[in-house]
Length: 257
Ligand code: PEP
Image 1 (tube, protein in one colour):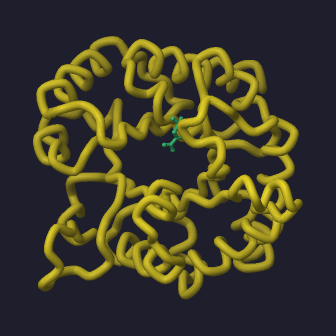
Image 2 (cartoon, rainbow, N blue to C red; image 1 turned 90 degrees about the horizontal axis):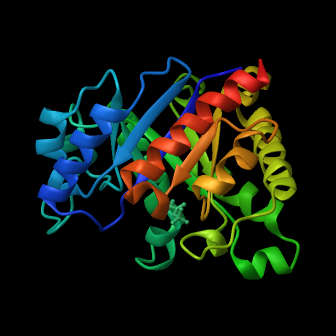
């Protein structure tokens, strides 16, 4: 039973002071479980100070986004090159980036490459829209997003990629995908990875689910065959709930042994 990866996406919440207090609380209360890796993704502004505060043996940091060029005249952007050393992971292609900020497949592909070039681990988010789900096109949507997001990634680089299956219609809506559908989507993703990078890569790649996970729902999703962890938005904003989910990840590993 592999280590579970639990990632909290704070989105545009928690001020500098709130984020620091949260991290303080989390580090005080979290139990160090060898079988769970905990990551939080705060706003970009707080990353510098949190990176000085965090005990990286307990908690790792992720950026919620990055720009793909390493420097230049790109007002308002933060390059992956500047995140190097501050964070271990960077979320790429989150549905809010794709659909609120109109990021295109090309942007996402270049961001994956920028993250890899700068020694960060990309968490590549993919998932179908409600329309694609209704039309029975989930597998096609996943296939296209994987193919495009991972174009030009070498087999060696692929070792550092994490995939998050995040149905667009389930993000921040309170509606989660049916666990049987999540299991099917994970199988589809592994099959596609096998075609792109081979059998070993397809069994070893870490695949997370994200979409309206709560403390109550977490165990059902952590038990899904082939799942390696969860990407959590809303429920990660409360340190106590986030810790409960981490404990559930630890317990699910023990049950699975
Ligand atoms: C997310 O932001 O990736 C997410 C899964 O959000 P929520 O848990 O709020 O649906």
